[in-house]
Image (cartoon, rainbow, N blue to C red; front, top):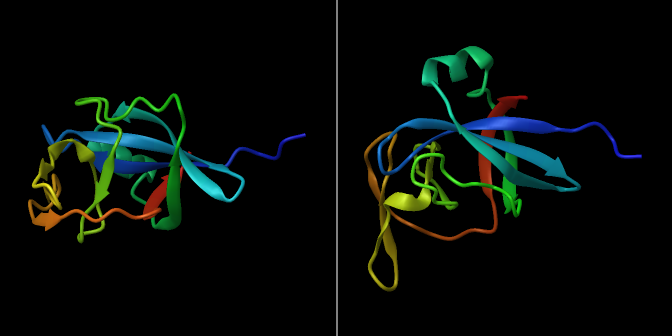
Length: 123
């Protein structure tokens, strides 16, 4: 018998149009996996507690994860400001990619990691 479902929603923005969306993550064993995404009003997200400070390391993607609800990119990027954006707004320069954060506007060089430490609220 499976244990109780442990899921959270993290707040993200589309790197193409800066619109807010939620990413549902679910714990599967020792891994947190992206399972679903949906457009989300930023004020409602705060009221629901999706910007809470419960930090986990997200490392997997469910086969049915639809990606950003606006540009459909399944990649995500975490800026130095600790906010999450979809990976659709990067420019590839061969050996590295440059990314403009949809939250703070800073440009950064992308680095690839096995997992991202993200904060999210209860689901």
